[in-house]
Amino acid sequence: MRGAKLYMEGGAELVYELRALLELEGYPIAATYEEADGILCHTHSIPDGEKPCLAVGEDVDYASVLAFAENLSAALWEERQAQAEQSANRPLRPTLNAVRRTVRAGGRSATLTEREFALFARLYEAKGTPVAREELHRALWPEGTSVKEVDVYVCYLREKLTPVLGPAHIRAVRGVGYKYEE
Image (cartoon, rainbow, N blue to C red):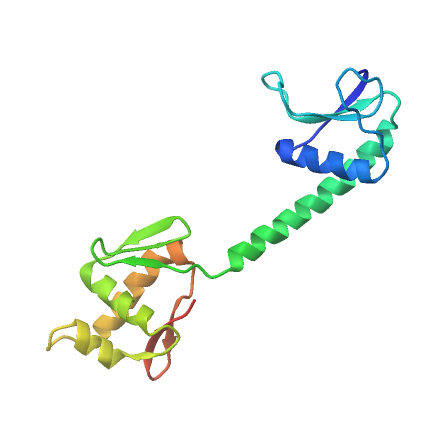
């Protein structure tokens, strides 16, 4: 095939997608590499260092294919960015492992101390419902310690869990205590 090659960032998947859309637009599509005209996906048997591309035959208006590809690439890139942002905004559901005292979400994990894990497990059980500081203190700390210990451990939890769950999952409820929100 004589003509030009249109190299695409994004790999073979994007090249096939572009070829299908070009065909829908009425551009001639080549069945084999030896055809003198048409557009062919060039994704297999690529020499080292060469990217997947569309081979554009000399009988095809290369400039119009290039303009179409650039517009399509920009639209696909924006669509994929929107999908990534949408998935990034989805709440991560943690998995708790009491034996290892770990919290996992989104492929990341945090190892907690025994008391941190017990505090998080209690807040997680009550999802969305505030748990009083005094209740947390009575359940997790021996008598004679200050209720402010709860505040200190919530701070520790936030530090360890933010990389795993993202920010602001453990919220303070003024005059009450704390709650876990997804």
